[in-house]
Image (cartoon, rainbow, N blue to C red; front, side, top):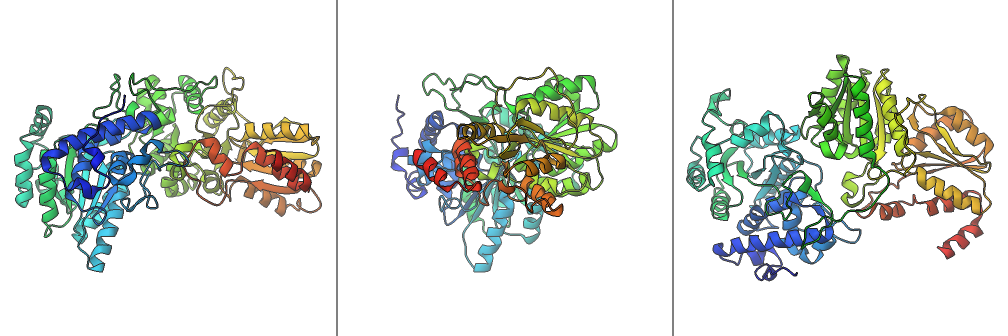
Length: 640
C-alpha cells in the first residue's frame, strides 16, 4: 500500500522546509519516518540510526541555513532522512546499489554533504577545521557536527574537543545519545552520558534547557533526577565537556520538536559563545515496524515486506566465514582458558557475540576504540593470555601505530582475526578490506594468513591458537563460504606452506585468500580450451612458501598471482622474492592480479569484482594475453 506524505511531497530541499510553520514540523517528521521505513523495505541498509534522528534532522535543517551552514553527520549511518530532505528522495530506494546513492554522506553526491564519512568519530575534527577556515575567511556561517555516544568512545573525538575548547571556536556539537552505538554502549563514558545533566546556568541557553527539560517524558525526567551526584570526582563540579571548554546544554528529548527547535534557535543566535555541546537523548530505531525489539538487529536490515515486515532472506547451504570463525574459536576456548575475544563495538559483525554467550568473562567489547583494543590485547598477551582481536580490515587501519609499536615491535602473540577482507559490497570503498596484507606483511615479526575457503579458516584459527612466536593475522571475506566439506575440528597448518588444489603444467594460478573459487572456475574454463592449469593456494602472505613459488615458476610458462588486496601486497612479496633470487630470468612469465589502484564504488560484490577485473573471465583473459594468444582474447571477448 502506497504511503501518504502530502506535506513531505512539498519539500524538495531544506529551503522548502524552512517556509513551513513550527506546528507543521511534527507532521513532516511523521511522514519522513514513514518514507524512511518504506524506502528501507525496498533497499535495506542502515535503518535504526536514521529512524532515531528523524526529528533531529528536521529541526537542524529547519533552524540552520544548510548548505551554507555546514551540517556534518558522524559515520553517517543516520543520514537517510537527511538525504530525503536534501534533494535525493527520488533516489533513496536505490541507496547502496551500484547506480544509486551512497550509504553514507559523500561530498561528490551533494552540496549538503560537506564531509564524507563512514568511519566514526571524525565529525568534530572536520567541523573544527571548517569553523577555523570560516574564521580565516571572515565568513559567518554555522558549523554543526552530529556525533553519537558510541562514537564519543573514540579518542579522536576528545582530541578534537580539546582543540576546539582551547581555541574557543564557534561551533555546535550535537551529542546524539541513544544509549548504544551499533551494539549496546560500553564503558564508563556511556554510562556517564546516560545520566549526565546540567547543574550550572548556561547564560540564557542553559536556563531554557533546564526549563524545557521539565517537559521530558517521565522516564527521561526520572533519569535526569537521579544524577545529582554526577559531579563526584569531577574537577570543580563541572561536566567533562565543560572542562574541555564546551558550554553544555541538555539533556534534551531528541524526539520533541517543541523542545529542539527553540533551543537550536537560541544556540544559533548566541554568537558570542564559543563551542557548544547540545546533548540530545533519542531512541535508536524509533518507530521501526518489527515485532522484535532487538535494537542492534535493526541497525541494518535487508529488504523486507512493507505490509508483513518479514525480512527477505537469501538461501545458502554454506556457512558464513564469520560464523565459522566464531564456532572454531569457541571450540578451542572450551579446552584453553587462556583464549580471549576482543572486539571494538562490533560483536555481532565479527561473531564475538557468539563467543560471549559461552564465555562472557573472556569477552571484551571496548567500544569504538580500535587503538585501545589493540594495545589492550597486547597487554593481555604479556600476561600469557591468547587474545584474539576480531576487527574488520577497514577498522584495523585505525590502529596501525599500535599494531606496529605495541604488538609487532615487542613480538607479542596477539592474534588478529580480520573480517571483511576484500571488497564488501554495498558499504563501498570506505569499508573495503583492501590494504591489510600490504600494511601487515611489511612488518617484522608478523605472520599473515588468508583463508581460501571456510574449512581453511578453521585450520587458520587452530594455527593461531598454537602460534606463540609473535603476532599473527588471518583474513577472510564477508559472506558465505564455498560450500566445501567441513572438518570436525581445525588442524594447525605448517607455517609458511601453501597447497596445490589442481595440478597442471602450462599455467599456474597462485591464489591468496577469497578468490580461490574464482581461480578454480577459471582453471576449468582454461582446461576446456586445452590449457593445462595448476591452481595453488598460498595460504600465507608471510612467510611465503618459497619452495612452492619456485616450483611453479620453474615448471610453468606463465604464473599469475591473484589476490583481493591492493598493490603492494602478496604479489609484491612474491615478485621481490623472485627478483632477489634470480628466478625471473629465463623462467616463467609472472603477472600479478590485484585490486586496481583506485577506490571501487558501492554495489553488489560480484559487480565490484567485475569492476576490479578479478572475476574468472578476467583471469582467463589475462592467461590468454600472457600466453600471447591475442586472437583467442578477441574470440573470448566477442562471445562474452
